[in-house]
Image 1 (cartoon, rainbow over the protein chains, first blue to last red):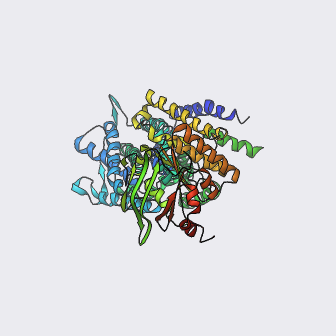
Image 2 (image 1 turned 90 degrees about the horizontal axis):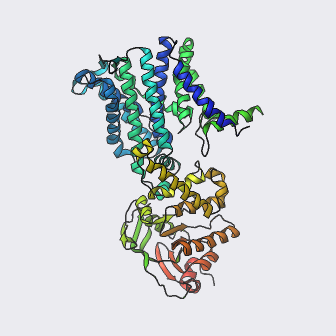
Image 3 (image 1 turned 180 degrees about the vertical axis):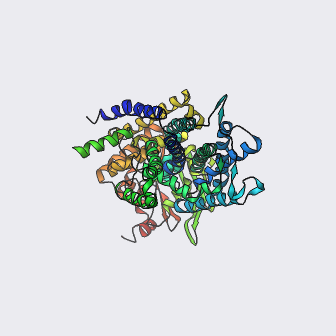
Length: 326
Length: 263
């Protein structure tokens, strides 16, 4: 029975999930589409931090800084030079990745909580720099407004329906790319570092280079998320990129399970859909959130959907369900 | 080879005046060490003699303050650890260091990392070259697992297998990198006599089959005397004696330092 379970979930579960995602926008209200849009943005942010935190085990609590770099790259280049937003998507990726390469190069050797503290500082410096309006580019506390909505040939993406597709297609492409990296020697090298840095080095992994690579790819994806965010809200301001945003991304990875792609989707759902469902109890949101985190750490420290080794993650989940029933 | 007292073959590893200090403590002091091709060289000495530090300097975990390390006539002094592995020196650790939450197969695949080269673009587009390379990595790793008798544990997480098997897994990971020199830090520690015997027989076997050279640290004197061709004795960071096991066994200086003045 358990042997057939993973096949069932892969052959039926995955297409079913894709079908739900594809059918959902037809007939959903704009409100629901917008919620789904932000679910997508946070999935992308979760995936981006997952590369650094989940795959390599580097404590990065300043990821909102990379998100901001991407958003402001799009905002400034679009409003000043009128470059189309979709062209700026890869540009934002590269800008955030380059920024990450520059700022993390000197701190990449730091371990554990030391790295954590420095990344918090990095994120805050980015936010404060944006508020201080360097060269008159960032608009200070008011931010940059008047960003164009994305256009694709004749097609202008200006409805919630269009944005939904935009963000989830980007998420889909990212997932395919990240899964491929996971299953290559690059993904394994990242995991070796997470498990034991010294042993990884002694096995021939260039630890420094692979850590930097993770930061560049992770930051790049966060930058791409920033671009999508800017193109939806048509305005960016520093208050969207606070330390709290970094904490949210961190929780997404922890809730879902380090290094697990399906885990990140569940984690992103938890931090974006949960508050919407419990809107009436809005003032208790933080209490719920705190209690949920404590319960998680007590009962599921590995996350809701941890990555399974030597088999499929789905089998793990189903086996557990079966065992509980039996 | 045997214990004739004469060492033939070229020098694989040579340290000259190797010195490593930690603050005020000189852990390794002007050490000259030679390992010849095809032999099993043992490094022994009382606790705190600096044996593991020598290993860490040779394999690039630490940088020495003075002296040089030559491996096959190439100066590898101060190189990063991953470059030294690529050059052909693989090691195991005293307190086994595996990738605990990865499978045994993935652990061994780590050794292949320095022998493969696929990059990010190849991985993203899953090029034919990458797929081929991944297949080769897998096949080679499976071969190494079979060699150490761990085929049954292929998909098991490293932390879930028995201690003795974990040590064999670490050896398999080191061998997967295709080394010329295998550096083993107390390979028999934590093993029962039977497992120790198996391990030693295995090491002797691979030296013959793969033309390897082995440098090991060992506490078990029976093991040292039984397996090694050449013994170097350290005390207080210095080399105090070297020679064949038979000679070392009767050397009064060694007995004084190592066995605490017994006899």
